[in-house]
Structures are given as C-alpha cells and as structure tokens.
Image (cartoon, rainbow, N blue to C red; front, side, top):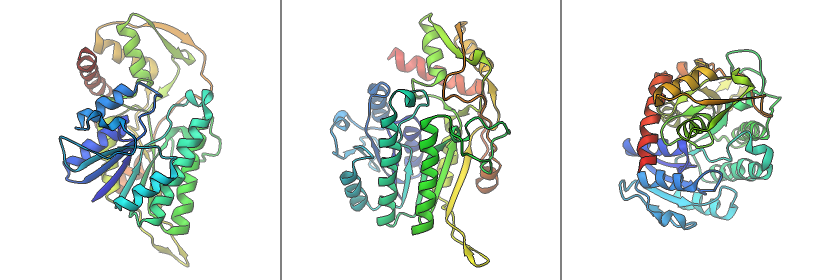
Length: 343
C-alpha cells in the first residue's frame, strides 16, 4: 500500500510514519517545516526517520537512509501546482492529512495562516484524491469543533455549530468539505477528532511541554482559568495505533432503502478519561521531582473548559482501546525530553 502522510515532520505525523514503515507500507511524507515552532525539532524528527538535511530543499524528494520505503518532500499544501504534480506522479492508495496550522491561541494572531493551510490546502488534498482514484482519505479534525458544549462525554452526534476559535472553524470546515466530496465523487473519507495528544517528540507550544521548560528553568507556569480546566489527554502511541487501523478500513457505500449511504465517517479519538489540569501539572512535577512556580490567569479567548471523548464508535468499529496512563505517558515524555535536550 502506498500512503501519503501530510505533516510528516510534525508530532503525530512523525510517529505515524514510523509505525507504518514497520508494517512494510510505502510512505511518502510531505511537510512545509514552517516556523510556527522551532524547525530544528522538525528536522530532528526527520533525522530520526533517516531523512537528511537535504530536506531543507523545496520540492526535492529525499529517500530515508534508514528505510527505503520512506520518501520525504518539502512542500506547501496550498501550492496547487506542486500538489497536483505529486498526486499525478505518485498514485497513492491512501492519504492521511495531518498537516494543518495548529494552535487555538495563535489563530487570534495570524488568522490568514489557518485559511491558507487548513482550507486552501485541504481543498488541494480533496482534489488530488478526486482525480487520482485514492481509495481512502483520513484527515485530522479536532475536539475543538465541540466548542463549549456542556454535555459530556462529547459525542460525534452532538451539534458542532458554535466554534469558539478560528482554528475550530477551519476543522469543522474540513469535515463539511470532505462530506461534500464523499457525496459528489464517492471518495471514502474518515475524519478524526483528536483529543489533546501528548508524548515524546511533541509540540513545544503544548501545555505539558511549556510546563516542563518553565519548571526546569525555574520560571512560573501560566495556569488559565485558575486551574479549573479538564482535558482528555491521549498518549501518542494510543493515537497512532488507532489511526493505523482506520487507514486500512475505508467507510463503505451501501444502500438504505432508496438512498445511497455516503462513504463518510467521523470519529472521536481520545482517552475518554478527562484529567483536571492541576492533577496533570502535579504528575509533571512528580516526574521531574520539582515543584512548579505558578501564575494563575483568567480563561484565554478561544479556550474550552472541558474535553471528554465518547470513543464508543471507534471501540465498536476498530476495537480501539487506549491503555497508557498519564503517569506512564509523562514518564516517557520526561525520558525523551532529558535525552533530546541534553544532546
């Protein structure tokens, strides 16, 4: 199977590539290696996967020195010409779109980046799938589409018409765009609403990463809504196992009475076990053996109070069962962080 992974120098993309290569899949990864956070971390992930610094060059395929089944190309999703050429040349069986401008708070500062990457870029992905007989499109949505829904746990049957950030609005737009292409052109598509993913090689803008850096530098950590927040923290290995299963099983077209069912699915993918932010911070403190200096702040614009995933559909359809505890996951992150930044 030949698979395109977009965002392959990113946190989830890097881990997914590593997992798929172990199964013998042929993987092409693309990423623009932007400076939303330190590009050096992205190059380090690529290096871990055997991709040399030739990856700095735009539109030049670079073969992995560790696995001949992995090729990386630096490009922008919103580059229509290059994306058309990529799809026509490579003839992918499956596409997994993880590339996006991430971050809720950054969308307040740079909204255009979200439209370019998350809307224009996603349209180019859909068009590539449409014109090149892609058998399954899997794409990253987000738990942020639920906004400030009060009903818990959050279910894919719940309304998602009131996003509270532009980031969330672009992710909901992706779901609507995919539905349209599944309806019009029969492209099997599966959207995944990720819930707060964490672990080794993670994004430096994520809370657990920021907390760790501040603790080690004896600087105060910012705690929003005075610590009264809950997140469904999900360890990266549990996420990747779920995504890998989904890639192999596109939604099927079937008939219900006179109407044809659209090959389109949306799933929550999370831990289904919300943790209070203060308990999460305490786990990080214990892992480092050091107490954090704390600064308490009001709720940030665009933030949500609680995330809590109903993953029953994923459990039923794919036997999805996240197993990693917060203590285990943070311990693995601390080991990686110590080794990476020491190096």
